[in-house]
Amino acid sequence: MQQFNLDADEKICLATRRYLLTLFAHIFVAFFLIVMPFFLLFPLFSWGRWGVIFFVFSIAVGLLTLLKTLVMWRFNILIITTKRVVKIRQVGFFDRTVSEMLLSRINDVSHRIRGFWSTIFHYGTLHIVAGNGETVLDFEYMQNPGKALKILNGLLQRLPSDDGGAGLL
Image (cartoon, rainbow, N blue to C red; front, side, top):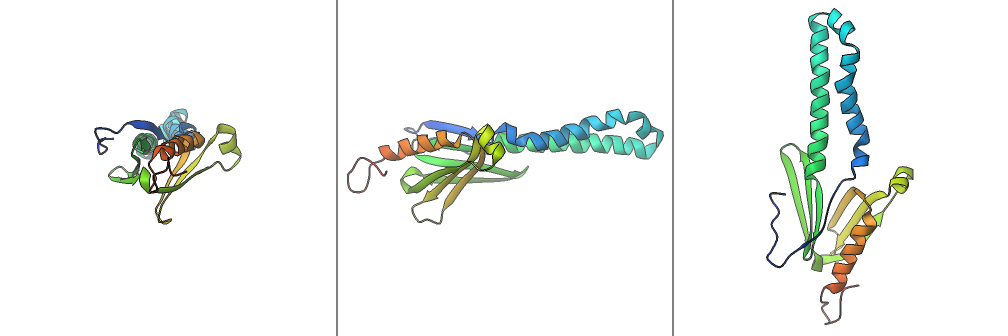
C-alpha cells in the first residue's frame, strides 16, 4: 500500500484482500513440491547428481510458488474510502496496477456468488460500474462481497446528488 495516500478528510471504510481459502490449491501444490522430495530422499540421492538436482529443483520451485502466491495475496487489495474505491492489483513480482474510481462516478454496484464452494464459504466478485457504463472495476474471490456492497451503497446514499437531493440511490 505504499502507492496509496489518503486525503486529509478521507477515511478507510473497508480494506479487503482475496479470501485466503481460495488460495488452497496454490498453497497445496507448493507444499507438495517442498515436502515430496523428502519422502523420496533415498531414491533420489541414489541417482547421484541428477537426483540431488531434482531434489533441490523441486524444493526451489515449491518455495517460489509459495512466495509468489503469498506476495500476490498480500499486494492485491481493494480499499473503499469515504471518497473513492481503489483496487491495487499485483500481476507479477514487478508488475502492479492501481485503479481508482471516485464514488461520485459510480453508477452501479453488484456482487455475485457463483458455484458450490463460493456459496458454502461465501466468497464472490464485487462488480462496480462507472457512470459511462464502460469503466468496470471487478474484485474477485473476496470474502463476503455483500458487506462491501452495503458499505458502498451507504457511502453512495450520503453523496450529494446533482438535483440537491439526499443521494444517488
